[in-house]
Amino acid sequence: MKLIVMIIILLSCSKNLEKGRNISSVEIIRKNYSIDPEAERKLKSVDWKQTFAEIFAKHIKQDKFKSQIPYTQSLKIKESIYYNSKPFDEIFLEILREPSSMEVTKRKEEVLSNKRVLESLANHKISKKDFLRTGAYDLIEFLENDLEKEDGPIGNYFETSLGNKMMETLKDTVFIILPGFGNHLIQEMVLPDLVEDINEYYGRSRTRPFINGGFNPGFINYKEYYGNPTRLIQFDIVQPMGKDIGTTFSTHSENAKALKIWIDELPNIYKEKEIVFVGYSKGATLATQILTDFPEIRDRTRAIISLGGPLQGSSLAEFLSQNIYNLGDNPEFSAIKDNLSHLPLKLDFDYTVKALAKNAFKENLFFKKLLENIPFISINHKNSLKDLFEKVFYEDSRVILEGLYEEGTTHMLDWNLKYLNQEYFDRPIALFNLSFLANYKDFLLRGPIGEDGSKLSPEVVPQFSAKGIDQKSLSLDQLSQLLLSINNQETIPGGLTDSMVNWNNSKFPIFDPLPLNKSYTEEVLSKAYETNVFFKTNFTFDEFVSLPRKDIFTKRGMANMDFVDLGEVRGTHWSTMFRQVARFPGSDEKLGHIHSFPHKAMFKTIIETYGIYKLIRD
Image 1: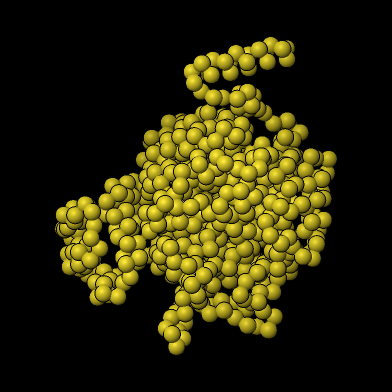
Image 2: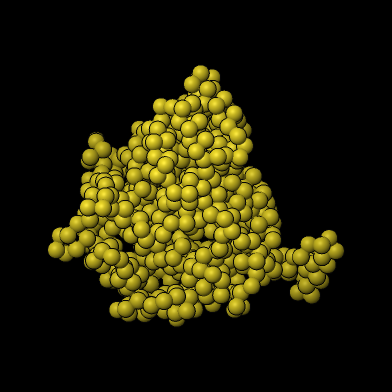
């Protein structure tokens, strides 16, 4: 029998090579991959949320979070983690029972930010009972011993004993980080701290060098960047940047086509590796799209890890797309479009600002101020703004509405009803989600950071000195997110959001306890019901809109899909993933506000948690 299987594999390889397609036997074997029933049972029994929270808290404690600010360990943990041992649906409904937004906020902190509970995560040993008699037990022991050391590792994580252990555990795996909506406009990598470490480990420059800067960055070719390692590639982390996969404003299908080509053209060493997509924001929904569109990618993919992904859509994207769409034939909007259409194809900065400020955006305060300050703007900043105008008014304007719509809640409801089932996810796959959850109080009234009661100034309130505004204390990121989310508050249950994605919308539908009629209008639900034959056949309309979502979605079958909720971290949509987003390209990030969230500790925890999962599964 083994001989017959080997002959079939060899014949398959030879046929594919005749077609010029370089497919290894490893890929073909993966197509028949299945999980042992005992391993599957073990995976279901593990409390993954607790495991993730314990490891994350221990990393924060051990790293002694390095900052200009003298954080105490316990307060840094409290500022970075939300945790409650109950499942999401119970916690969510418990918080939403409160009668007012003030009570919801108070209850959320009581339920998710209990000081004693959070300190116990860092101080108690990692719970090992779930891992007895599994392949992961030795790794848990290794983690426990390493994280109990008083001083954390100094330098590159992947040069440490724990980093080497993860290299060995995940040697047949590549993490592909997928960017969010609009990420092609910025130069900073997603989760830069640890990605810089692994780039350095393989002899690459810590960040991928760019050819031109501005808001339209172009980077050196990724095949060149990833194609000349100074060590044998084991586990690696790669990510498309700039316009590697087109504009990130595009539709999911367009980005998925480009991403398929990007993956196919990675150096040969990556073609034999299992794929784990780490999807930030839109990157999570792009990951699900490429799996439904391309079975050959689905064959190699073992997991999707969603980080703040709008898995049920973003109500902010829905709000923006609907409001722009509803402008329709509005005379003022038509005038703006007409004025934009007459701008020269190659923009001159001064002329463009004057044209926009006097015509298309004559009532806009930003353009008025820009016009007044033209003489004082440096050439570098003018070039950066010119790049941004060219992107928005020419390259991206034709696709941004479609992209916003697809990030919205209406489209994602339709997508989940059609595709989130075992018909399309027909290979065993783990679907992790980690949610971000902001405390709006943090924007305006920061808590203490030291045992002496010392506090930080609010990140969205300018602090003045003799030289003017203190740029290091004012966060343009936080201010932008606050202003963007204010108009959207009426569609956010209990105001529970990371500023861009509602808390419950960052979970896969089977975790969401709300019936569909709590989130969508009857018009939207009627259309969804009429256009999805399966649900119309198996449910009455009243059942479809009023039953818990889990009952609706599991009816179609999810046999190959292991949904894993990793819980919540405390932070906003941007602060949890980047050091700094809103800054002029080319300027020194140290001159502005840098987010204090422990990005490196979080990403180490993600890698280690997946390593534990993989050892049990395999």
